[in-house]
Image (cartoon, rainbow, N blue to C red; front, side, top):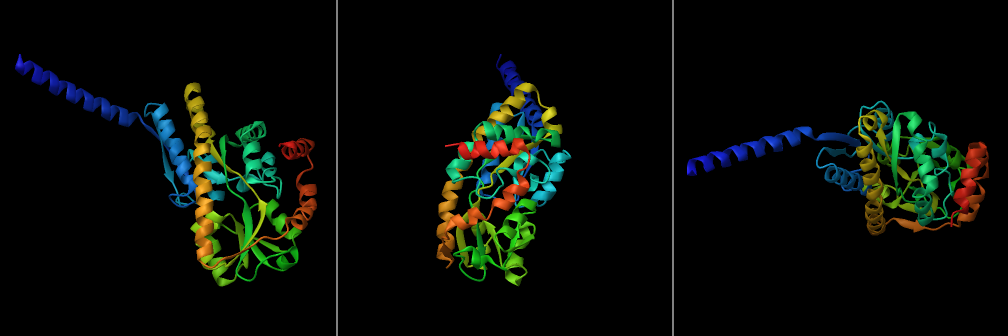
Length: 327
C-alpha cells in the first residue's frame, strides 16, 4: 500500500512538473520597446501592463520590456512595430505625426491648458478616436500615458520672453510640427535623436533642447544645460501600441484583456509620473539649474501660423474645437 502511494506521489510530482513546463512553454512572450531607462514611469507602466496581462490570461501571455533604446530610437521602433518585428511599442506621439494626421492634434503647442486637461481629453472619447486612427497603419492603439509638459532648457541664459529665444538652436523630436513651432518662436530647430542630445549640448552643436523634468534629469542634460524655462509649450501624450500582426493572432477574448490591461496601466503610470516629476525637479534644482517662468501669452499668440498650417482638414479643426471645449 505504502509502495503504491509513494509511486502515486512520484507520478503526481512528475505530472505537475510536466504541466508546469508545458505552461511555461505555452507562455507567449511579447517584446516591448521603450527608449527610456529602467525605472522610468513609462517603462514601469509597460511592465505593470505585462503583469496584468499575465495574471488575466493565466500566464499564457507575458511582456518583456526592452528599455534604454535597446531596440533602437523611437523612429526605428515605429518602423519595427509596424512591420511586426516587435509586438508592443511605447513612444511619444511625435514620431507618428507625419504618418497619422489625428496624432498631430494632441502634438500641437498649447492645445492643452494643463496636464489635467490633457489627461481628461486623452482618456475620453477624443482619445479613443485618436487610438482608432492607428489601425490602418499596421498597429493597434491601446492607451495614452502622460508625457508631461515640455519646456525649453539651454546652456546659455534664462529665457524670460520670446526675444531671448531669437537665434538660438534647439533640438526637437523628428517631427515637422515641432520644427515649425520653434521657428514661430524665432529660434532654429535641429531635429536629432534623443540619445544624441547630451553630446550636442556639451559640444555646442545645439544651444538647448526641450523636454519635461524627468527626461531632463534622467538623461543627465541638467549636467550641461543650467537654464530651464517653464513655458510648457507642449503636453504631448505618450502612446502604447501593439503590432497589428500580433493583435490579429489573439482571440477576441484576449484582445479585450489586452485593451483593458493597457487602460488599467494608465492610472499606475500617472501615479509614477507625478512622483517622478516632483523628484526630478528637486534633483535638477539641487544641481544648480535655474528655473524661470516666462509669460506664456506671447508664446501662445505666436502659434497661429502653426495651427493655420497643420489644422486645415475640417475634421481636425473640429477635434481642436472639441479639445478646447473640454472642461
